[in-house]
Image 1: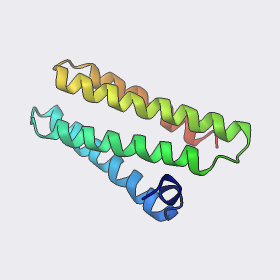
Image 2: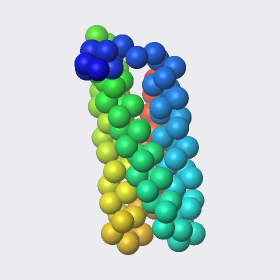
Image 3: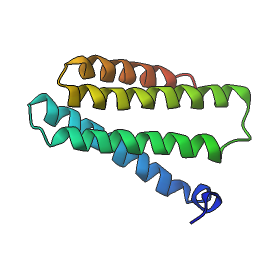
Length: 114
């Protein structure tokens, strides 16, 4: 499958990818909060799905105005924070809670900017 065919995937498929990623991030963070070790893998998978969704979105909607491109870039940076939170989970520190809080607050702020 070529990259152009991947970019032409259905919009609903990409939205399901994002919803699944966010659900896995929530389930993984709650499970890891209660010290269940398998849930950090679910969190990592969800974070990876969110990053892939944001990368597809920035390439799929390349002909947008400057404001939309800026918001897409901010989304990419915020989704990379989830990867950092995954590393923090595997490292054994509690920094992942602060990173998820920062991610949630910035994404909430961005929903009102569109």
